[in-house]
Amino acid sequence: MKKGIHPELKEAVIRCACGAEYHTLSTKGSYTIEICSACHPFFTGKEKLLDTEGRIKKFKKKYGLK
Image 1 (cartoon, rainbow, N blue to C red):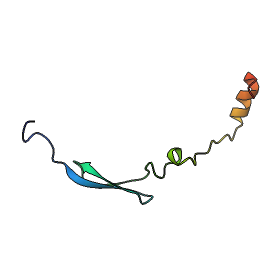
Image 2 (cartoon, rainbow, N blue to C red):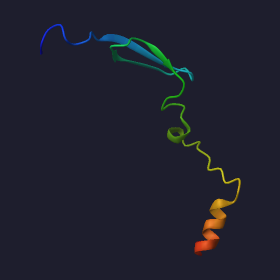
Image 3 (cartoon, helix red, strand yellow):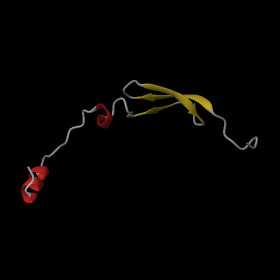
Image 4 (cartoon, rainbow, N blue to C red):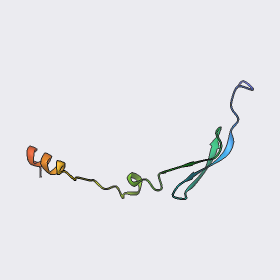
């Protein structure tokens, strides 16, 4: 590698709003994020399917699905 052209890597701590911390290397340094894999509904299994207008029911009725 050429010397002097690459940014310097520093230890970084990425903190989520839920309290989770991830230790890594970064050129930016430490920072805070709003959501991570520990609290995101898709990864935790707490995701809810909202069907306020009955679209799923309407689709199933239209195409004869049970």
